[in-house]
Image 1 (cartoon, rainbow, N blue to C red):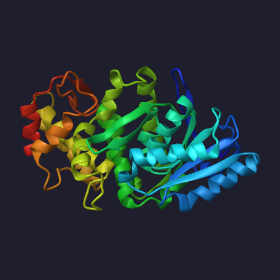
Image 2 (image 1 turned 90 degrees about the horizontal axis):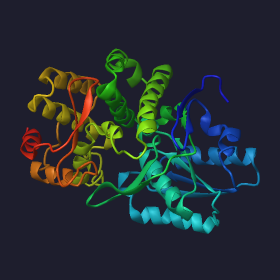
Image 3 (image 1 turned 135 degrees about the vertical axis):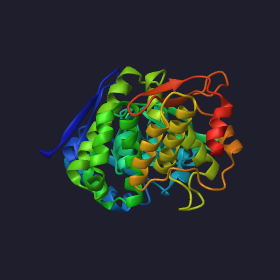
Image 4 (image 1 turned 90 degrees about the vertical axis):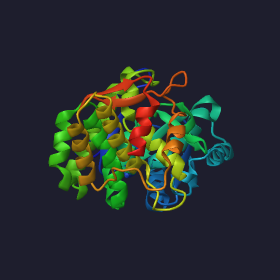
Length: 368
């Protein structure tokens, strides 16, 4: 494998390795080594499959000619992360005759990774899954940690399972074909790691903004590795999100509410994607923290300035009713006994989980 490869190991009951570097999607021997049996389902979407699916299949076959490989392709977009398409992946596994030692390869962004991982979690009560993230967002977030799910109209990720991958291969070369909007969306999640627990990384992101936005390979590899290190440390200690892991959701309760209320991007490019919604959500969480006396307004503005500098939105899109967003937030999985439980902060690098947050204060932030 390539000498410029970086590794991040995730420990715990089901340890695995994250591989970060160029050309990983064509490293057939490394990919095939993850397959314990002979059945492979390659799940991708209509944007990514034409670019990389054939290469992955050829690499796997070159390494192990006996592999039986089927492909299941979703329409691209968050609106495809549904129970219906999950059912399609299950049918594809059935058509393949996949046995308990089969392996699902998730080739794409977070939608593909979440849905393919959920299918792997459910087929025969759990088979192997290898994550092949092709977006920055999925490389630093959804491919790591074993959270899999699909959306329903009532909310995002409400149907799912914890199912750790067998391995993650983050091919940084795939980022060259990533639209700038998707790159920025991924950088929102990178910024999150600085915001919740690493002030020095936050400052590094301020200094390296131009390089990261220009797609500088070394800067992106460093950002991915540092983000994955942070996530790995937290996931090891809290694999099922019973405590500390919820810190990774800074801004997500607000952001998921925005996504759900907009219909998960179904109306086109005017709707925020996941990273953009999280960017707005982080700003709202920081401002709520200031309103509650936990942090300064200056810290909230510092975060908003950094996000805006990366070309990310920092305000709720027009036309979304505050009451409707609050109703969506009440469905969040972190809530306990019907009370809002949010990730807030005490300034850059110091996030915490706050139970029983006053809904009036939340509504005040949503109203603006």
